[in-house]
Length: 211
Image (cartoon, rainbow, N blue to C red):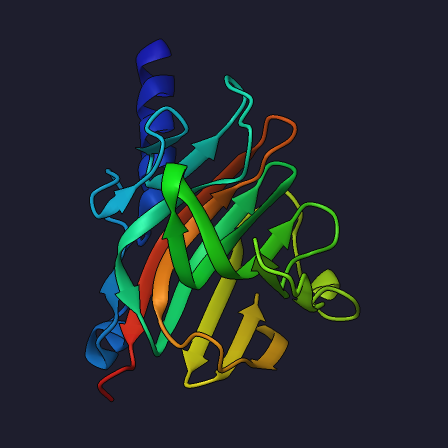
């Protein structure tokens, strides 16, 4: 019975990973590229004791160490015009996806953020370490109607020229024009404060700069 239960558990785990961190046929045809291989942090850089890859997920966790400031896992490549797709799950607290941003020392990042938080900030744009604060509230009447707290939610972030759009679980939650910075890095946030956890999977991008 123990052997059967273990085999069943392995089957369930394998089933849950099937199709994760892989491109669909349409995405391959369009030219999307995977940014996370499902098993390592290859291509990314951040504080190694806060980030890991396991079970097809990219995991950020601050339970074991209180961080003095927001910290990020940073993709080692810059993008201008693009469409970024990913799945994101928050256990608690606050996270987000930086784009067209600038890397500062100690894995700090400055710039635009597609926001996500366990209370009321999914789907908008925030100016991380800038002076503009919340630039678009994508939550009220929008993301609040589709976000599944504590579960994976899909995010599509599209930036072409000054035009920026965010879609959460199939619903467009943000439209913004911002010409201040038209290229930069992509990064994933762990927010200072209580111990928190953020998980990511299926991170893929279509570079539209040359299209």
